[in-house]
Image (cartoon, rainbow, N blue to C red; front, side, top):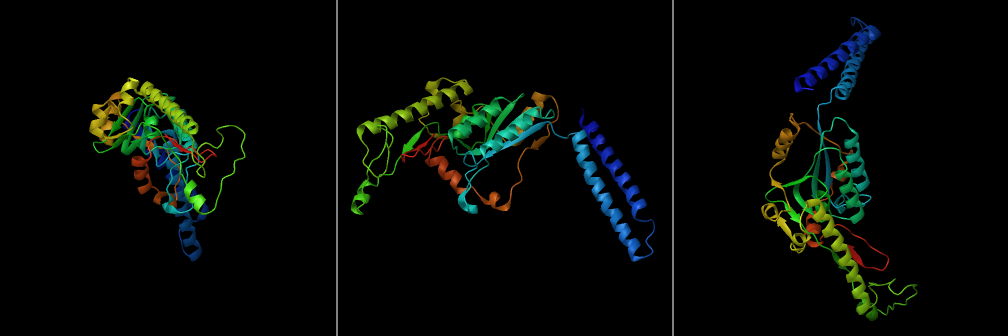
Length: 332
């Protein structure tokens, strides 16, 4: 369907709805206002016209959709529930399940011939990140990931499930690695007269418990988990990006600016959003119009993010924040 056909179809439906609403309103509420009551009737007519135009616009959009590309954004730390705190400054992104639902809705929408995945995220939890990656990979059509500021860790994991990754010259890309950490407050606890008494079943159940010194066996056990996470991450990214795993390991979990990421093969193209749309127009052989699939956001939600995203991108590394009950913290 051509752009002119779509526009004329939409305009025709809107004008028809407005005409019908005007006639019905006039007949229902009065013809010529000779009194206050009749004037009120005219106002009601106008209200009916407005309603008719709005309804007609929605009907026109449904009958003659003006978009052929769906866009879904992944912004902020990736968590199952969005990770929002009670204060606007506490940071948080959209819940991963909601993002998956939007991608699946785009896949079910026959008007969406391609999917844009906008990435501005430092990463987050591993399984929610993988859920988003799988949903993007399952989209029936071209899937293009493009990053604005940050595509690190879990964000890069998601991008590896798309056909292409675009970035800006100054975008931060990479952080393909794993980090594990534990606070050690055993000396402070001893000074305060706090002791740790173990009641556990299983040798490594309390490995990483911050109130006790870690043993060599526990250290080796936890490092083994980190190594396994890392190998899994490298293999998934290498498969999605069609790269040698050795090339991924050679990045040493560093982040790169867009131009260097392109040279390393971590990014397919550099360009702006307009460049991405121009590429899609060539691929789809039609003018591109994008519809953003997003939830309604309140003011508090829009104020969140920012500093936490940048700090997490540089300091944390990859896609997960798994906090088992033993006090050890994994992030990949």
